[in-house]
Image: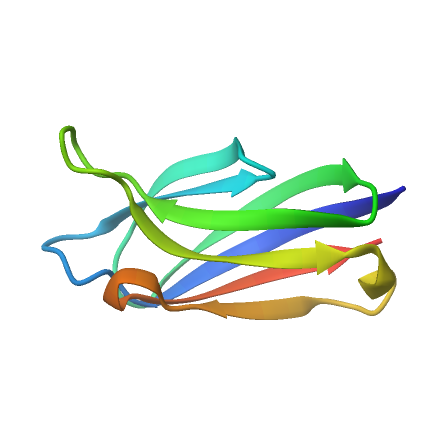
Length: 106
C-alpha cells in the first residue's frame, strides 16, 4: 500500500474561457478537493492524502455552470514505484490553461 499526498497547485494561466477557473481535483474518479477559485499566478495548498495500491489517477477540472460541461485541465498517474523519492511535479495544460501540481508518494 502506498500513499499519495497532493501538496499544492499553481496556476500560471487559466483556461481559455472568461474569468477565473473554479478548480477541483479527483483521485480515481472521486472528488477530493475544491472548488477553489484560481486566477493567473494563483497558488493553493491542497494537503490531501489518499492510500492506493499500484497506481492512482489524479485529474484536475474547471467547474462550469450547467449546461456547459466542466473543462478538463489534465491528469496524471502516480505510481507506487515513486514512493520516497521526494516531491514530484506535473504540468497540466488542458483547455488553454497552464497549471503545476505538486505531490509526494510514500
